Image (cartoon, rainbow, N blue to C red; front, side, top):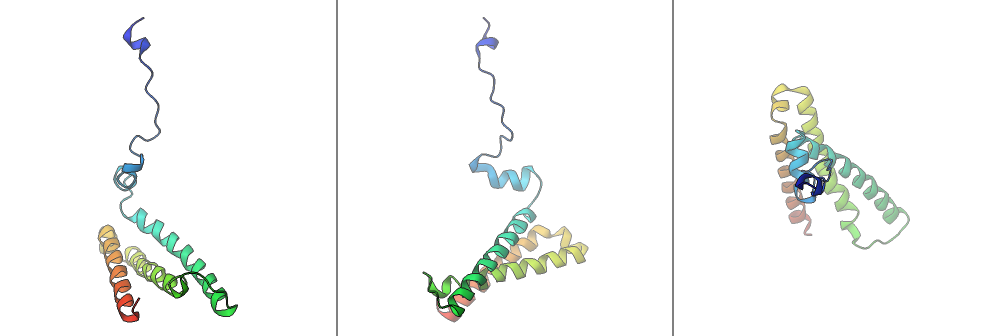
Length: 129
């Protein structure tokens, strides 16, 4: 029996770069989707969170239910997710309308994240969270 026959066959892996440590690198660079994929994913997540926040807001204000976390769970959830959702919506409009924005899609995504964080910090300072 030769060494080739006794060695176990290599395990077939669908995507060797997609283990837990490399997921961000794999999705962003290996699949060549760039940061735009993360912007797309966050747009969907924030949309779902805004719907959830609106339902909780209506339940809390109209029917008098009390939720743990109070206004942070309702008003601020809607506001913070809405801020990202709105800034990213403006980014998408710019990308589809102007060629210069399409070339700088990743930089615009970083600008959206920065603008969202600045808005959140300003809101927390102004309201006093």
